[in-house]
Image 1 (tube, rainbow, N blue to C red):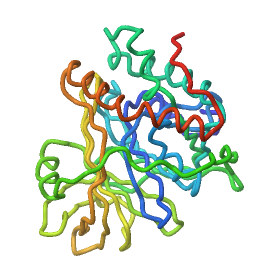
Image 2 (tube, one colour):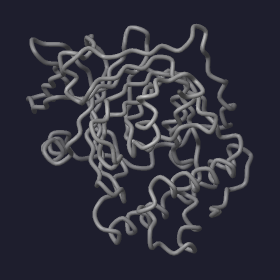
Image 3 (cartoon, one colour):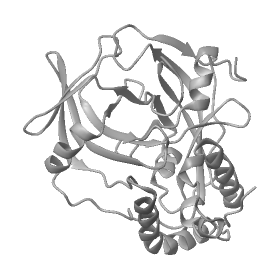
Length: 328
């Protein structure tokens, strides 16, 4: 059993999952979900994700509203058979008071968990990628865990609850100045992107907001395009979905992780007979890196030109020097 008392059966999944859906809330209370890599915290009582210092929106949303969720429903690359699908709702603690320590941790953790992502890359090149390796960490203290046998959600979930009064540490103070604008934009029509993604990106997950104000992320059993969005089918063991803001995320990556493709649609849902109707309002810009090593490397070089100035600005907002990429 973990230091926090999480069920033993879930610990291997938390340790070995390559991808988790991480959902946080906007100022208006709408969920935004993106796939990222999960790590068990050093003390064994948190499940942690990170975001680049140069694109801090995922962390800043959690600093404003610590209610977040993590959906472990992507079996690709974890090396496990018959792993459960696990939904974790918890309280976030944002850590960016020591950017160098954050960067050192990410270098160590990512090279251990995703060694193929940088295999063959010269160290002197990687050391120039502080725009990517400089990190903000979001430590998530679970308060409510549900898990099912698989993505079908055909049966009622098992449930674990944290001890009454469980709280998360306070986040580090917010940096001075204004949060940067998104560094990428999305100007393609949503339907064009949906037609491409719906068949090619195999894993589809829906996030809504539950009655307690937490994001609630669930795997989708079936997705169909409609005139204004999608018709989504959930398993019989899924919790009920109320009308409200929502995010639909599609993604994929290889069994050996060297990159991933993502697509997130935001809008609103309403339950209809036998399904959930999702009306698309817009598509989020994403940073997908897929293809061979040469294509991924080219994507990083392109990003560097745009993110390097932001790296300096975001470090300055926190009154810290730009962190260095140091290898153990």
